[in-house]
Length: 231
Image 1 (cartoon, rainbow, N blue to C red):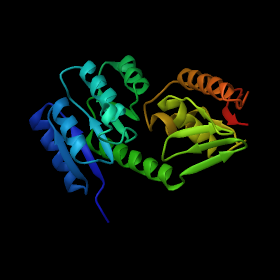
Image 2 (image 1 turned 180 degrees about the vertical axis):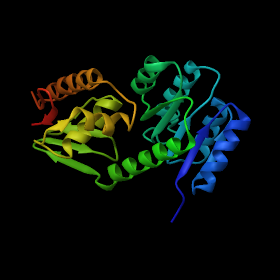
Image 3 (image 1 turned 30 degrees about the vertical axis):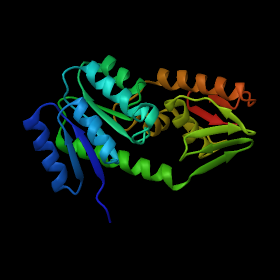
Image 4 (image 1 turned 60 degrees about the horizontal axis):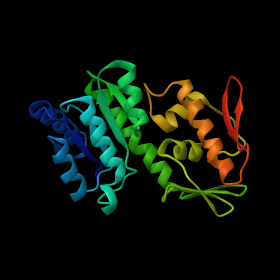
C-alpha cells in the first residue's frame, strides 16, 4: 500500500524539517516546501494527497498560496485543484474564516500540537477517500459528479463555488434526510474549529439560488433549529 502523501509548507526551516520528520516516521510520504514558490514547484512535480500551509511571511501569503492551489496552477492545470488543504494560522476567528472562505478544507490555530496536526491530516485523507469512492450521486433530476466536481439539473449545468459544491455533495448523499448544521460543518469545512452556523446558512442560500437558476426551485430546505435537507 502506498504511503499517504503530504506537501508541508513552512518558511521556518528548522521547525518545518522537524514536523516533516515526525510525519515521515508516522508513515507519510512528505515533501517539504520552504516558500510559496517552492510549494508551487513541488505541487506541479508530484501530486499530493494533502497540502498543509503552515508558517509563511504573512497570512496574506498563506491566502495567496491557497488561491494558487485552488486554481490548479492556472489555465495549464498543473495539479489537482480539489486536493485537501489545511491551513495553520493565527489571528483568531477572522483569520480562520478568511482561510475557510478562501477554500481551505480545515484550519488550526497556532500553536498546534503535533498529535492534533496528524489527526487532522488523517481525517482529511479519510474524507477525501470516501468522497472519491462514489463518483456520481443522483436525486431526482439532479446529478452530482464527484470526480469532476460538477452538478447538473436535467442536463443543465449548475454553477457552484467550491464550498457550495461540497455542501451539495453532502446533502445529495442522503436525499430527503435532514443533515444537522454541525455535521455539515464537519463535512464541508473540516473537523474541530470551522465555520459558524451563519456561514452554513449563507452557503445554503447561495446553493438554493444556484439550483433554482438551473430549474430546481426550493430544492434545499431549511429545517428550523436542526439543519438542511435536499428535496
